[in-house]
Image (cartoon, rainbow over all chains, first blue to last red; front, top):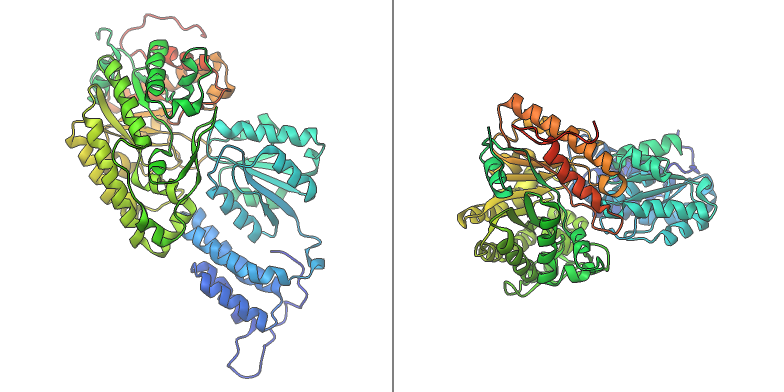
Length: 233
Length: 373
């Protein structure tokens, strides 16, 4: 996550004298490798090691967990690894984040962009949404995950209360595409459509469908969607 | 000169790549056909649980639209329900799993299968029997069932299953073996139905957005799907494969499975998705009747004129490509994914799709003038 780091990342300080304790760089490398190698236990262990050694959690997340997840994401985009790998890597990512995120001072979160992700009402297929959430988290966003089968009212309420900058909706099924239109309509009615960028995804959707329902963007996969969000939202 | 054929003759000729009067057509109109019954207020939950309601909708659809294929897809949670997953039935929406019953690796080994015919599969079998016996002499009647990996993903949740595949595949294989045994019994039941010609196996997870060749081979293609396909053929039914995912494993599912019919969706936004012409050009129709690829969105958002125009363009592309490839008829005009079954579906567009194939799918005679040219 691109949070403000409280320590000078340009330095390469050692944590202890001698060779017994790992350097900060070695610890973040362990974090990256744990995610890249899909190892939840290793990610948790490295995150705990980072805490014990006093490594800035932002540094550990950015240069460790996120770096590893980005490598997996790139391999997924190139069809070098597939869904089981991405899901297992994301489990390792979140294992590390669970330990490191609570340690970040609130002040450092001030500039962080926020997003809401949801599978629309009537649909329970959430793998695509979960991958997007993972990559968007790795891309520096604080993501509120509303889950699957989410009514428009719940999505709009989350957007309003969270001062959300990006809303990501997905569906795998044609019949539930209309719920995206319903949600955007409710966003407009509630007066908060203009406050956030709305992007949609899922195989049956298309750019023309996005345009027709008043969404800002539609992308064909999570990686490209995150790239677009980072560049445009 | 090919004389006018009835639907069954047309499809059987297409399966053999013989000359036909016109291209065959297969709108995947399933749940939406409940709206053709009575005063149009039949609930989805009744359609999906009552064999008579289920079958009556396909019989009425055949009478109303006259499509060549009849394909009784209920939903993707039939087998998962029989394995103990909670399925939510709605008034106007497709039933779906809203409570998985596998949470640990041990749970895969605790799965139990019901007696054949006692669960939701029993409703599917009986409903299929009723429409196949009524329509099997005039149309190509088929049924749909979830493949073992799809059934298990519905039971466990796809995300959980995929991670467990990576962590420890042994209990997953035990569960897949059990599901294959259950589905073998269902195949035997289907084989006793007079008028039924094919089983569509929904092998959804054979797609490159989710699984590699080796993963798909291990968890479905080389073992469980192979057994079920062989059993289907041994029981005198055609092996049809349905996959509405993007980037399907075409070589495995068409060539490897030796499918007689292959139904698939087309996502133009997805890089490497093949158009109908590309499917034909690359030889996927050489030995298989491929069914595609009208975007189901058009049934929600398009006009009759737009539907006619879309089908006209597809027919023209298909006919040109078949001719170039030296084929006669191995492509059927279909939606590749279920026509949206909700109340927003424009029923006139289903009629327009079938009418357009009659108009523009004509192969050797031209007796109609286009209403939109």
